[in-house]
Image (tube, rainbow, N blue to C red; front, side):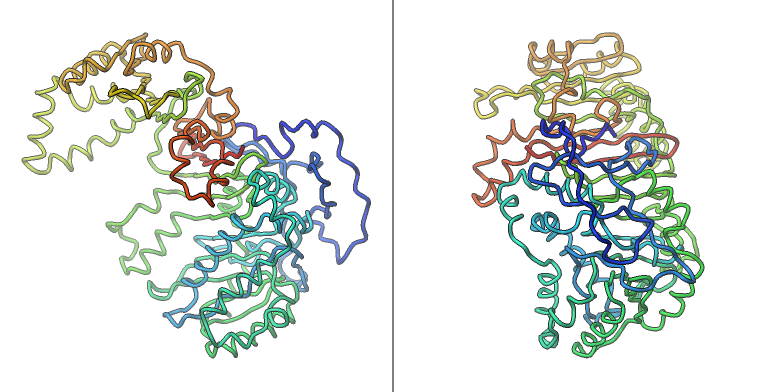
Length: 583
Protein backbone atom coordinates (compact mmCIF):
# COMPACT_ATOMS: atom_id res chain seq x y z
CA UNK A 1 0.00 0.00 0.00
CA UNK A 2 0.96 3.60 -0.15
CA UNK A 3 2.04 5.10 3.12
CA UNK A 4 -1.11 5.43 5.14
CA UNK A 5 -1.97 8.81 6.49
CA UNK A 6 -2.29 7.73 10.05
CA UNK A 7 -4.18 9.50 12.77
CA UNK A 8 -3.15 13.10 12.82
CA UNK A 9 -1.78 13.20 9.27
CA UNK A 10 -2.55 16.51 7.60
CA UNK A 11 -3.83 17.99 10.85
CA UNK A 12 -2.06 21.27 11.68
CA UNK A 13 -2.65 20.63 15.34
CA UNK A 14 -0.76 17.38 15.02
CA UNK A 15 2.55 19.26 14.86
CA UNK A 16 2.37 19.96 18.57
CA UNK A 17 3.76 17.29 20.92
CA UNK A 18 1.14 15.20 22.66
CA UNK A 19 0.73 15.92 26.38
CA UNK A 20 2.13 13.21 28.60
CA UNK A 21 -0.73 11.44 30.40
CA UNK A 22 -0.48 11.08 34.12
CA UNK A 23 0.28 7.52 35.25
CA UNK A 24 -2.62 5.60 36.65
CA UNK A 25 -2.69 2.76 39.09
CA UNK A 26 -3.00 -0.69 37.57
CA UNK A 27 -6.44 -2.24 37.81
CA UNK A 28 -5.43 -5.89 37.58
CA UNK A 29 -2.59 -8.26 36.89
CA UNK A 30 -0.26 -6.87 34.23
CA UNK A 31 -0.32 -8.44 30.78
CA UNK A 32 3.19 -8.27 29.23
CA UNK A 33 1.80 -8.92 25.75
CA UNK A 34 -0.40 -5.81 25.67
CA UNK A 35 0.43 -2.10 25.69
CA UNK A 36 -0.37 -0.24 28.88
CA UNK A 37 -3.68 1.67 28.77
CA UNK A 38 -3.31 5.19 27.45
CA UNK A 39 -5.17 8.24 28.62
CA UNK A 40 -7.99 9.19 26.25
CA UNK A 41 -6.96 12.00 23.88
CA UNK A 42 -8.09 15.50 24.58
CA UNK A 43 -10.45 17.33 22.27
CA UNK A 44 -8.74 17.84 18.93
CA UNK A 45 -7.03 14.49 19.11
CA UNK A 46 -3.27 15.12 19.25
CA UNK A 47 -0.90 12.67 17.52
CA UNK A 48 -0.54 9.29 19.15
CA UNK A 49 2.83 8.08 20.48
CA UNK A 50 2.16 4.46 19.60
CA UNK A 51 4.98 2.33 18.23
CA UNK A 52 4.37 0.62 14.87
CA UNK A 53 3.70 -3.08 14.75
CA UNK A 54 6.80 -3.64 12.69
CA UNK A 55 5.25 -6.14 10.32
CA UNK A 56 7.00 -6.17 6.96
CA UNK A 57 4.19 -6.36 4.47
CA UNK A 58 3.98 -6.89 0.75
CA UNK A 59 2.37 -3.69 -0.42
CA UNK A 60 1.10 -2.73 3.05
CA UNK A 61 3.44 -0.60 5.13
CA UNK A 62 3.62 -1.00 8.90
CA UNK A 63 0.57 0.52 10.55
CA UNK A 64 1.03 2.90 13.49
CA UNK A 65 -0.82 0.76 15.97
CA UNK A 66 0.41 -1.02 19.07
CA UNK A 67 0.69 -4.82 18.82
CA UNK A 68 -2.37 -6.80 19.71
CA UNK A 69 -0.53 -9.59 21.51
CA UNK A 70 -1.79 -12.81 22.98
CA UNK A 71 -1.81 -14.23 26.50
CA UNK A 72 0.28 -17.29 27.41
CA UNK A 73 -1.20 -20.66 26.56
CA UNK A 74 -0.95 -24.17 27.95
CA UNK A 75 -0.55 -25.28 31.53
CA UNK A 76 -0.24 -22.44 33.93
CA UNK A 77 -1.87 -19.95 31.61
CA UNK A 78 -4.15 -17.46 33.37
CA UNK A 79 -7.77 -18.50 33.41
CA UNK A 80 -9.27 -15.64 35.34
CA UNK A 81 -11.01 -12.54 34.02
CA UNK A 82 -9.27 -11.17 30.93
CA UNK A 83 -11.95 -9.00 29.34
CA UNK A 84 -11.97 -5.25 28.86
CA UNK A 85 -14.48 -2.65 29.83
CA UNK A 86 -16.28 -0.57 27.23
CA UNK A 87 -17.92 -1.71 24.01
CA UNK A 88 -18.80 -5.36 24.39
CA UNK A 89 -20.55 -8.21 22.66
CA UNK A 90 -23.77 -9.78 23.81
CA UNK A 91 -24.20 -13.31 25.15
CA UNK A 92 -23.82 -16.43 23.05
CA UNK A 93 -26.55 -16.99 20.47
CA UNK A 94 -29.20 -19.48 21.42
CA UNK A 95 -30.18 -22.50 19.40
CA UNK A 96 -32.84 -22.15 16.74
CA UNK A 97 -33.45 -25.87 16.70
CA UNK A 98 -32.24 -26.16 13.10
CA UNK A 99 -29.89 -29.14 12.91
CA UNK A 100 -26.75 -28.16 14.83
CA UNK A 101 -28.53 -24.97 15.90
CA UNK A 102 -25.40 -22.82 16.08
CA UNK A 103 -23.62 -21.56 12.94
CA UNK A 104 -26.56 -19.87 11.22
CA UNK A 105 -27.54 -17.88 14.25
CA UNK A 106 -23.93 -17.11 15.10
CA UNK A 107 -23.36 -15.60 11.66
CA UNK A 108 -26.55 -13.55 11.97
CA UNK A 109 -25.50 -12.19 15.33
CA UNK A 110 -22.00 -11.47 14.02
CA UNK A 111 -23.44 -9.51 11.10
CA UNK A 112 -25.65 -7.52 13.45
CA UNK A 113 -22.67 -6.67 15.63
CA UNK A 114 -20.68 -5.50 12.61
CA UNK A 115 -23.50 -3.25 11.41
CA UNK A 116 -24.06 -1.75 14.84
CA UNK A 117 -20.35 -1.10 15.33
CA UNK A 118 -19.77 0.46 11.92
CA UNK A 119 -22.96 2.50 11.68
CA UNK A 120 -24.06 3.33 15.18
CA UNK A 121 -21.12 2.80 17.49
CA UNK A 122 -19.15 6.01 17.05
CA UNK A 123 -19.82 7.33 20.52
CA UNK A 124 -18.80 4.10 22.19
CA UNK A 125 -15.26 4.36 20.87
CA UNK A 126 -14.97 7.81 22.42
CA UNK A 127 -15.39 6.87 26.05
CA UNK A 128 -13.95 3.39 26.37
CA UNK A 129 -10.36 2.89 27.45
CA UNK A 130 -7.88 3.31 24.64
CA UNK A 131 -5.66 0.31 25.35
CA UNK A 132 -7.20 -3.02 24.36
CA UNK A 133 -7.05 -5.71 27.02
CA UNK A 134 -7.31 -9.49 26.97
CA UNK A 135 -6.17 -12.12 24.51
CA UNK A 136 -7.41 -12.53 20.98
CA UNK A 137 -9.77 -15.43 20.23
CA UNK A 138 -7.24 -17.10 17.93
CA UNK A 139 -5.51 -18.28 21.11
CA UNK A 140 -8.50 -20.49 22.00
CA UNK A 141 -9.24 -21.82 18.50
CA UNK A 142 -7.48 -25.08 17.47
CA UNK A 143 -4.52 -24.79 15.12
CA UNK A 144 -6.18 -26.99 12.49
CA UNK A 145 -9.01 -24.51 11.83
CA UNK A 146 -9.59 -23.93 8.10
CA UNK A 147 -11.59 -20.69 8.34
CA UNK A 148 -11.87 -18.03 11.03
CA UNK A 149 -14.10 -14.96 11.47
CA UNK A 150 -13.33 -12.45 14.24
CA UNK A 151 -15.12 -9.33 15.52
CA UNK A 152 -13.40 -7.02 18.00
CA UNK A 153 -14.90 -3.86 19.46
CA UNK A 154 -11.93 -3.42 21.77
CA UNK A 155 -9.19 -3.04 19.13
CA UNK A 156 -5.85 -1.26 19.44
CA UNK A 157 -5.71 2.32 20.73
CA UNK A 158 -4.74 3.62 17.30
CA UNK A 159 -7.84 2.00 15.77
CA UNK A 160 -10.12 3.57 18.37
CA UNK A 161 -8.74 7.06 17.78
CA UNK A 162 -8.77 6.64 14.00
CA UNK A 163 -12.38 5.43 14.14
CA UNK A 164 -13.46 8.44 16.17
CA UNK A 165 -11.73 10.82 13.76
CA UNK A 166 -13.23 9.19 10.69
CA UNK A 167 -16.74 8.99 12.14
CA UNK A 168 -16.46 12.64 13.22
CA UNK A 169 -16.71 13.51 9.53
CA UNK A 170 -20.40 12.60 9.68
CA UNK A 171 -22.18 15.23 11.85
CA UNK A 172 -24.82 12.85 13.17
CA UNK A 173 -22.22 10.32 14.23
CA UNK A 174 -20.15 13.10 15.78
CA UNK A 175 -23.14 14.11 17.90
CA UNK A 176 -23.66 10.49 18.91
CA UNK A 177 -20.27 10.44 20.59
CA UNK A 178 -21.67 12.49 23.45
CA UNK A 179 -24.26 9.79 24.16
CA UNK A 180 -23.36 6.72 26.13
CA UNK A 181 -24.76 3.33 25.17
CA UNK A 182 -24.17 -0.37 25.50
CA UNK A 183 -24.00 -2.44 22.33
CA UNK A 184 -24.23 -5.58 24.41
CA UNK A 185 -27.66 -4.65 25.68
CA UNK A 186 -28.91 -3.70 22.21
CA UNK A 187 -27.70 -7.02 20.83
CA UNK A 188 -29.19 -8.97 23.71
CA UNK A 189 -32.55 -7.28 23.15
CA UNK A 190 -32.47 -8.43 19.53
CA UNK A 191 -31.73 -12.01 20.57
CA UNK A 192 -34.30 -12.05 23.36
CA UNK A 193 -37.02 -10.57 21.13
CA UNK A 194 -36.75 -13.62 18.84
CA UNK A 195 -37.35 -16.07 21.70
CA UNK A 196 -40.18 -15.29 24.17
CA UNK A 197 -38.70 -17.77 26.65
CA UNK A 198 -35.74 -15.45 27.21
CA UNK A 199 -37.91 -12.66 28.61
CA UNK A 200 -37.21 -14.02 32.09
CA UNK A 201 -33.45 -13.45 31.60
CA UNK A 202 -32.23 -10.09 32.87
CA UNK A 203 -29.48 -8.47 30.84
CA UNK A 204 -28.31 -6.40 33.80
CA UNK A 205 -27.95 -9.33 36.21
CA UNK A 206 -27.53 -12.41 33.98
CA UNK A 207 -25.47 -11.14 31.03
CA UNK A 208 -23.74 -7.81 31.62
CA UNK A 209 -21.56 -8.92 34.56
CA UNK A 210 -19.56 -11.37 32.41
CA UNK A 211 -19.83 -10.75 28.66
CA UNK A 212 -16.66 -9.50 26.92
CA UNK A 213 -15.61 -7.58 23.82
CA UNK A 214 -14.49 -10.15 21.26
CA UNK A 215 -16.10 -13.06 19.46
CA UNK A 216 -14.91 -15.46 16.79
CA UNK A 217 -16.38 -18.30 14.77
CA UNK A 218 -14.09 -20.98 13.35
CA UNK A 219 -14.67 -23.91 11.00
CA UNK A 220 -12.80 -27.06 12.02
CA UNK A 221 -12.06 -30.39 10.29
CA UNK A 222 -14.68 -33.08 10.68
CA UNK A 223 -18.40 -32.71 10.83
CA UNK A 224 -20.88 -33.22 8.00
CA UNK A 225 -22.61 -31.06 5.42
CA UNK A 226 -25.65 -30.78 7.69
CA UNK A 227 -23.69 -30.49 10.94
CA UNK A 228 -20.33 -28.75 10.39
CA UNK A 229 -17.75 -28.85 13.15
CA UNK A 230 -17.52 -25.30 14.47
CA UNK A 231 -16.46 -23.45 17.58
CA UNK A 232 -17.76 -20.10 18.78
CA UNK A 233 -15.36 -18.29 21.11
CA UNK A 234 -16.96 -15.52 23.18
CA UNK A 235 -14.77 -13.41 25.45
CA UNK A 236 -15.85 -13.26 29.10
CA UNK A 237 -14.70 -11.01 31.90
CA UNK A 238 -15.51 -13.41 34.74
CA UNK A 239 -15.54 -17.15 34.06
CA UNK A 240 -17.53 -18.01 37.16
CA UNK A 241 -20.27 -15.52 36.41
CA UNK A 242 -20.18 -16.54 32.74
CA UNK A 243 -20.87 -20.17 33.61
CA UNK A 244 -23.79 -19.18 35.86
CA UNK A 245 -25.19 -16.69 33.34
CA UNK A 246 -24.98 -19.12 30.42
CA UNK A 247 -26.65 -21.82 32.52
CA UNK A 248 -29.45 -19.36 33.31
CA UNK A 249 -29.92 -18.57 29.60
CA UNK A 250 -29.82 -22.25 28.62
CA UNK A 251 -32.38 -23.15 31.28
CA UNK A 252 -34.71 -20.37 30.18
CA UNK A 253 -34.50 -21.29 26.50
CA UNK A 254 -35.29 -24.95 27.23
CA UNK A 255 -32.67 -26.17 24.71
CA UNK A 256 -29.07 -27.20 25.03
CA UNK A 257 -27.49 -28.30 21.75
CA UNK A 258 -23.92 -27.22 22.42
CA UNK A 259 -21.04 -28.15 24.71
CA UNK A 260 -19.62 -25.34 26.85
CA UNK A 261 -15.99 -25.07 27.92
CA UNK A 262 -14.17 -22.13 29.49
CA UNK A 263 -10.54 -21.44 28.72
CA UNK A 264 -8.26 -18.41 29.07
CA UNK A 265 -11.08 -15.89 29.39
CA UNK A 266 -13.29 -17.32 26.64
CA UNK A 267 -16.48 -19.35 26.60
CA UNK A 268 -16.18 -22.00 23.88
CA UNK A 269 -19.38 -23.32 22.31
CA UNK A 270 -19.17 -26.40 20.07
CA UNK A 271 -21.70 -28.96 18.77
CA UNK A 272 -23.03 -31.38 21.37
CA UNK A 273 -20.56 -34.18 22.05
CA UNK A 274 -17.50 -32.39 20.59
CA UNK A 275 -16.29 -30.50 23.66
CA UNK A 276 -13.68 -33.08 24.68
CA UNK A 277 -12.20 -33.35 21.19
CA UNK A 278 -12.11 -29.55 20.94
CA UNK A 279 -10.05 -29.27 24.11
CA UNK A 280 -7.82 -32.09 22.94
CA UNK A 281 -7.15 -30.24 19.68
CA UNK A 282 -6.43 -27.06 21.61
CA UNK A 283 -3.89 -28.87 23.76
CA UNK A 284 -1.95 -29.59 20.57
CA UNK A 285 -1.80 -25.91 19.66
CA UNK A 286 -3.88 -22.85 18.85
CA UNK A 287 -4.54 -21.02 15.60
CA UNK A 288 -2.26 -18.23 16.80
CA UNK A 289 0.62 -20.69 16.45
CA UNK A 290 -0.40 -21.92 13.00
CA UNK A 291 2.47 -20.93 10.67
CA UNK A 292 0.20 -20.26 7.66
CA UNK A 293 -2.17 -18.13 9.71
CA UNK A 294 0.69 -16.23 11.35
CA UNK A 295 2.28 -15.51 7.96
CA UNK A 296 -0.95 -14.14 6.53
CA UNK A 297 -1.61 -11.96 9.57
CA UNK A 298 1.96 -10.64 9.51
CA UNK A 299 1.54 -9.47 5.94
CA UNK A 300 -1.95 -8.13 6.65
CA UNK A 301 -0.76 -5.99 9.56
CA UNK A 302 -3.38 -4.22 11.69
CA UNK A 303 -6.40 -6.51 12.10
CA UNK A 304 -8.83 -3.69 12.87
CA UNK A 305 -12.31 -4.28 14.22
CA UNK A 306 -12.99 -7.36 12.12
CA UNK A 307 -10.96 -9.93 10.25
CA UNK A 308 -11.40 -13.13 8.26
CA UNK A 309 -8.82 -15.84 7.51
CA UNK A 310 -9.05 -18.92 5.33
CA UNK A 311 -6.91 -21.84 4.18
CA UNK A 312 -7.98 -22.92 0.70
CA UNK A 313 -6.33 -26.33 0.93
CA UNK A 314 -7.97 -27.06 4.27
CA UNK A 315 -11.35 -25.93 2.94
CA UNK A 316 -10.94 -28.15 -0.11
CA UNK A 317 -10.12 -31.19 2.02
CA UNK A 318 -13.06 -30.46 4.30
CA UNK A 319 -15.40 -30.02 1.34
CA UNK A 320 -14.34 -33.37 -0.14
CA UNK A 321 -14.93 -35.05 3.23
CA UNK A 322 -18.38 -33.51 3.65
CA UNK A 323 -19.47 -34.33 0.09
CA UNK A 324 -17.98 -37.81 0.14
CA UNK A 325 -15.81 -37.27 -2.95
CA UNK A 326 -12.73 -38.66 -1.21
CA UNK A 327 -10.55 -35.71 -2.17
CA UNK A 328 -11.45 -35.90 -5.88
CA UNK A 329 -12.07 -32.69 -7.79
CA UNK A 330 -15.68 -31.59 -8.04
CA UNK A 331 -17.52 -29.14 -10.27
CA UNK A 332 -17.28 -26.47 -7.58
CA UNK A 333 -14.69 -23.71 -7.24
CA UNK A 334 -11.00 -24.61 -7.00
CA UNK A 335 -10.56 -23.88 -3.31
CA UNK A 336 -6.97 -25.04 -3.27
CA UNK A 337 -6.24 -22.64 -6.11
CA UNK A 338 -7.21 -19.75 -3.85
CA UNK A 339 -4.20 -20.44 -1.65
CA UNK A 340 -4.68 -18.82 1.75
CA UNK A 341 -5.25 -15.28 2.93
CA UNK A 342 -6.78 -12.78 5.30
CA UNK A 343 -9.01 -9.70 5.20
CA UNK A 344 -9.51 -6.92 7.76
CA UNK A 345 -11.87 -4.00 8.28
CA UNK A 346 -9.90 -1.13 9.80
CA UNK A 347 -9.92 2.61 10.21
CA UNK A 348 -7.61 5.48 9.41
CA UNK A 349 -8.42 9.06 10.30
CA UNK A 350 -9.37 9.77 6.66
CA UNK A 351 -10.92 6.50 5.54
CA UNK A 352 -12.34 3.11 6.44
CA UNK A 353 -10.69 0.24 4.65
CA UNK A 354 -11.33 -3.36 3.70
CA UNK A 355 -7.79 -4.66 3.17
CA UNK A 356 -6.62 -8.13 2.33
CA UNK A 357 -3.71 -10.37 1.42
CA UNK A 358 -3.65 -13.51 -0.72
CA UNK A 359 -0.73 -15.95 -0.76
CA UNK A 360 -0.06 -19.12 -2.74
CA UNK A 361 -2.71 -18.37 -5.39
CA UNK A 362 -2.43 -20.67 -8.41
CA UNK A 363 -2.14 -19.18 -11.91
CA UNK A 364 -1.89 -15.61 -10.68
CA UNK A 365 -0.50 -13.67 -13.67
CA UNK A 366 2.96 -12.19 -13.47
CA UNK A 367 2.45 -8.49 -14.10
CA UNK A 368 5.01 -5.90 -15.09
CA UNK A 369 5.85 -3.39 -12.39
CA UNK A 370 4.80 0.22 -12.95
CA UNK A 371 2.09 -0.52 -15.51
CA UNK A 372 -0.55 1.52 -13.71
CA UNK A 373 -2.11 4.24 -15.83
CA UNK A 374 -4.48 5.91 -13.36
CA UNK A 375 -1.94 7.96 -11.42
CA UNK A 376 -0.87 9.85 -14.58
CA UNK A 377 -4.37 10.63 -15.83
CA UNK A 378 -5.49 14.28 -16.27
CA UNK A 379 -6.23 16.11 -13.03
CA UNK A 380 -9.92 16.55 -13.94
CA UNK A 381 -10.62 12.80 -13.91
CA UNK A 382 -13.72 11.93 -11.89
CA UNK A 383 -13.74 8.17 -12.45
CA UNK A 384 -11.27 5.62 -13.79
CA UNK A 385 -10.76 1.89 -14.15
CA UNK A 386 -7.38 0.30 -14.80
CA UNK A 387 -6.49 -3.35 -15.48
CA UNK A 388 -3.10 -4.89 -16.14
CA UNK A 389 -1.95 -8.21 -17.50
CA UNK A 390 -5.12 -9.05 -19.45
CA UNK A 391 -3.17 -9.99 -22.56
CA UNK A 392 -0.98 -12.41 -20.63
CA UNK A 393 -3.98 -13.83 -18.78
CA UNK A 394 -5.83 -14.39 -22.05
CA UNK A 395 -2.86 -16.23 -23.55
CA UNK A 396 -2.71 -18.67 -20.65
CA UNK A 397 -6.47 -19.18 -20.59
CA UNK A 398 -6.97 -19.43 -24.35
CA UNK A 399 -6.58 -23.23 -24.64
CA UNK A 400 -9.42 -23.68 -22.15
CA UNK A 401 -11.53 -20.96 -23.81
CA UNK A 402 -10.98 -22.46 -27.25
CA UNK A 403 -11.83 -25.90 -25.93
CA UNK A 404 -15.04 -24.66 -24.35
CA UNK A 405 -16.20 -22.61 -27.35
CA UNK A 406 -14.93 -24.97 -30.01
CA UNK A 407 -16.48 -28.04 -28.44
CA UNK A 408 -19.55 -27.47 -30.63
CA UNK A 409 -19.79 -26.85 -34.36
CA UNK A 410 -21.56 -23.54 -33.77
CA UNK A 411 -18.82 -22.34 -31.43
CA UNK A 412 -16.05 -23.28 -33.82
CA UNK A 413 -17.84 -21.49 -36.67
CA UNK A 414 -18.20 -18.38 -34.51
CA UNK A 415 -14.47 -18.15 -33.85
CA UNK A 416 -13.61 -18.78 -37.49
CA UNK A 417 -16.20 -16.26 -38.69
CA UNK A 418 -14.93 -13.56 -36.33
CA UNK A 419 -11.38 -13.99 -37.59
CA UNK A 420 -12.45 -13.73 -41.24
CA UNK A 421 -14.82 -10.79 -40.83
CA UNK A 422 -12.45 -8.67 -38.75
CA UNK A 423 -9.27 -9.82 -40.39
CA UNK A 424 -7.73 -10.82 -37.08
CA UNK A 425 -5.87 -13.80 -35.72
CA UNK A 426 -6.99 -15.15 -32.37
CA UNK A 427 -5.78 -15.04 -29.71
CA UNK A 428 -2.69 -13.09 -30.87
CA UNK A 429 -4.43 -9.89 -32.00
CA UNK A 430 -6.74 -9.87 -29.01
CA UNK A 431 -3.70 -10.15 -26.76
CA UNK A 432 -2.18 -7.14 -28.54
CA UNK A 433 -5.33 -5.11 -27.89
CA UNK A 434 -5.52 -6.03 -24.24
CA UNK A 435 -1.77 -5.49 -23.94
CA UNK A 436 0.03 -4.79 -20.71
CA UNK A 437 -2.53 -2.40 -19.25
CA UNK A 438 -5.85 -0.74 -20.10
CA UNK A 439 -7.04 2.45 -18.45
CA UNK A 440 -10.54 3.88 -19.00
CA UNK A 441 -11.17 7.45 -17.79
CA UNK A 442 -14.12 9.81 -17.41
CA UNK A 443 -13.22 13.54 -17.11
CA UNK A 444 -15.30 16.17 -15.29
CA UNK A 445 -18.14 17.42 -17.51
CA UNK A 446 -21.80 18.38 -17.44
CA UNK A 447 -23.42 15.03 -18.04
CA UNK A 448 -26.92 16.53 -17.89
CA UNK A 449 -26.36 18.90 -20.82
CA UNK A 450 -24.57 16.90 -23.48
CA UNK A 451 -26.70 18.31 -26.29
CA UNK A 452 -27.14 14.95 -27.94
CA UNK A 453 -23.40 14.31 -28.05
CA UNK A 454 -21.65 11.30 -26.61
CA UNK A 455 -20.09 11.83 -23.18
CA UNK A 456 -16.37 12.46 -23.13
CA UNK A 457 -14.43 9.32 -22.26
CA UNK A 458 -10.94 8.11 -22.99
CA UNK A 459 -8.90 4.92 -23.17
CA UNK A 460 -5.16 4.50 -22.70
CA UNK A 461 -3.68 1.13 -23.70
CA UNK A 462 -0.07 0.12 -23.15
CA UNK A 463 0.40 -2.63 -25.73
CA UNK A 464 3.09 -4.95 -27.05
CA UNK A 465 2.65 -3.58 -30.60
CA UNK A 466 1.33 -0.04 -30.87
CA UNK A 467 0.90 0.04 -34.66
CA UNK A 468 -0.97 -3.25 -34.76
CA UNK A 469 -3.22 -2.15 -31.91
CA UNK A 470 -3.96 1.10 -33.77
CA UNK A 471 -4.94 -0.83 -36.92
CA UNK A 472 -7.16 -3.23 -34.98
CA UNK A 473 -9.03 -0.39 -33.25
CA UNK A 474 -9.58 1.42 -36.56
CA UNK A 475 -11.05 -1.76 -38.06
CA UNK A 476 -13.35 -2.29 -35.09
CA UNK A 477 -14.48 1.36 -35.09
CA UNK A 478 -15.22 1.33 -38.80
CA UNK A 479 -17.16 -1.92 -38.52
CA UNK A 480 -19.25 -0.40 -35.74
CA UNK A 481 -19.91 2.85 -37.62
CA UNK A 482 -18.45 4.99 -34.83
CA UNK A 483 -15.53 6.41 -36.82
CA UNK A 484 -17.06 9.90 -36.74
CA UNK A 485 -17.06 9.90 -32.94
CA UNK A 486 -13.96 7.97 -31.92
CA UNK A 487 -10.54 9.63 -32.21
CA UNK A 488 -7.29 7.76 -31.75
CA UNK A 489 -3.56 8.31 -31.69
CA UNK A 490 -0.56 6.05 -31.15
CA UNK A 491 2.70 7.00 -29.46
CA UNK A 492 5.21 4.15 -29.49
CA UNK A 493 3.49 1.18 -27.90
CA UNK A 494 0.82 3.31 -26.19
CA UNK A 495 -2.54 3.79 -27.89
CA UNK A 496 -4.87 6.65 -26.93
CA UNK A 497 -8.57 6.61 -27.83
CA UNK A 498 -11.17 9.27 -26.93
CA UNK A 499 -14.52 10.70 -28.00
CA UNK A 500 -13.11 14.19 -28.60
CA UNK A 501 -9.89 15.63 -30.01
CA UNK A 502 -9.40 17.86 -26.96
CA UNK A 503 -9.60 15.01 -24.49
CA UNK A 504 -7.42 12.83 -26.73
CA UNK A 505 -4.68 15.46 -26.48
CA UNK A 506 -5.25 15.83 -22.74
CA UNK A 507 -5.06 12.07 -22.28
CA UNK A 508 -1.77 11.89 -24.16
CA UNK A 509 -0.27 14.81 -22.26
CA UNK A 510 -1.34 13.23 -18.98
CA UNK A 511 -1.56 14.82 -15.57
CA UNK A 512 -1.07 14.22 -11.89
CA UNK A 513 -4.28 12.57 -10.69
CA UNK A 514 -2.13 10.47 -8.39
CA UNK A 515 -1.11 13.61 -6.52
CA UNK A 516 -4.66 14.64 -5.58
CA UNK A 517 -5.81 13.98 -2.04
CA UNK A 518 -9.01 12.25 -3.14
CA UNK A 519 -7.05 9.75 -5.25
CA UNK A 520 -4.03 9.31 -3.00
CA UNK A 521 -6.17 8.40 0.02
CA UNK A 522 -8.60 6.19 -1.90
CA UNK A 523 -6.27 4.11 -4.07
CA UNK A 524 -3.59 2.19 -2.20
CA UNK A 525 -0.37 2.01 -4.23
CA UNK A 526 -1.98 4.11 -6.94
CA UNK A 527 1.28 4.43 -8.86
CA UNK A 528 2.09 0.71 -8.71
CA UNK A 529 -1.25 -1.08 -8.52
CA UNK A 530 -1.86 -3.65 -11.23
CA UNK A 531 -5.60 -3.04 -11.14
CA UNK A 532 -7.72 -0.32 -9.65
CA UNK A 533 -10.91 1.72 -9.59
CA UNK A 534 -11.28 5.36 -8.55
CA UNK A 535 -14.43 7.46 -8.16
CA UNK A 536 -14.47 11.09 -7.02
CA UNK A 537 -17.77 11.19 -5.15
CA UNK A 538 -17.67 14.94 -4.51
CA UNK A 539 -17.55 15.71 -8.25
CA UNK A 540 -20.29 13.21 -9.12
CA UNK A 541 -22.48 14.07 -6.14
CA UNK A 542 -24.65 16.65 -7.98
CA UNK A 543 -25.91 13.90 -10.30
CA UNK A 544 -27.33 11.62 -7.62
CA UNK A 545 -27.67 13.52 -4.33
CA UNK A 546 -31.29 14.58 -4.99
CA UNK A 547 -32.21 10.89 -5.35
CA UNK A 548 -30.82 10.00 -1.94
CA UNK A 549 -33.36 9.98 0.96
CA UNK A 550 -33.11 13.21 2.95
CA UNK A 551 -32.17 11.44 6.17
CA UNK A 552 -29.16 9.85 4.39
CA UNK A 553 -27.85 12.84 2.46
CA UNK A 554 -25.67 14.07 5.29
CA UNK A 555 -23.85 10.76 5.32
CA UNK A 556 -23.47 10.72 1.52
CA UNK A 557 -22.12 14.29 1.50
CA UNK A 558 -19.53 13.32 4.11
CA UNK A 559 -17.98 10.80 1.71
CA UNK A 560 -15.21 12.15 -0.53
CA UNK A 561 -14.06 9.30 -2.79
CA UNK A 562 -13.90 5.53 -3.23
CA UNK A 563 -10.96 3.46 -4.41
CA UNK A 564 -10.09 -0.16 -5.04
CA UNK A 565 -6.61 -1.47 -5.80
CA UNK A 566 -4.92 -4.81 -6.40
CA UNK A 567 -1.17 -5.30 -6.44
CA UNK A 568 0.59 -8.54 -7.35
CA UNK A 569 3.54 -8.61 -4.96
CA UNK A 570 5.20 -11.87 -5.91
CA UNK A 571 4.72 -15.37 -7.26
CA UNK A 572 1.15 -16.25 -6.30
CA UNK A 573 0.90 -13.35 -3.83
CA UNK A 574 -1.24 -10.22 -3.93
CA UNK A 575 -2.66 -7.49 -1.73
CA UNK A 576 -5.87 -5.52 -2.21
CA UNK A 577 -7.69 -2.66 -0.55
CA UNK A 578 -11.14 -1.09 -0.84
CA UNK A 579 -11.33 2.35 0.77
CA UNK A 580 -14.08 4.87 1.44
CA UNK A 581 -12.61 8.32 2.09
CA UNK A 582 -14.38 10.96 4.17
CA UNK A 583 -14.39 14.74 3.72
